[in-house]
Length: 236
Image (tube, rainbow, N blue to C red):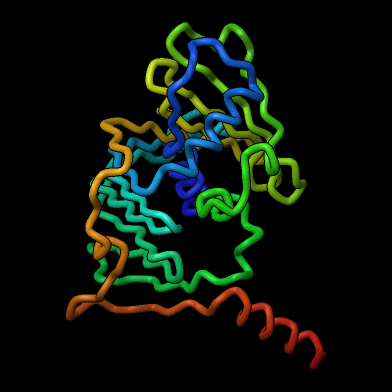
């Protein structure tokens, strides 16, 4: 679940535009979608906080740096609360925790193409095709930013994401903040800073090779898991 949220966070953060100070929702969506097509690489610092509505407190906080390269390559490096990496070359995901010297390797296959965060991130769908978009209430707006509310159109996606809010800086039209609410009301907040659009990034950052002493756990692909489950059901 955490991975789905951070991948969507990155997808939304890489959107930037240059435009007039006043835009309608439709105009803003159009500019965001057009600009996303021009983004090749992306780099930023991030801070993350997960809050529980039920308990009324913060559950976790983290910070680090994120790198992105089309198509679908990511490198999330958490430095707090402990060092943690999420790396993908678009085909395989590596979840590496240095403190336990262990990496989880997960294949990314076509069965995930319907996944909301992944399809948005990899440029296979547009905001307007997947979300109902509106401006947040006027009292939440400010003269130096736009705050948007995104509601997934598909019911299965609304189960995962009860709602999404974007804070778009009016001067630079970069997405500086992403707030995701799940169906239980919990919030996952991502703030981005020191954003660089189309920087030169070493492609080796999007591959992972386990060092000596690091254990590798390989998870089955979604397709294999579904086939195994279907086979078990037929035997019953």
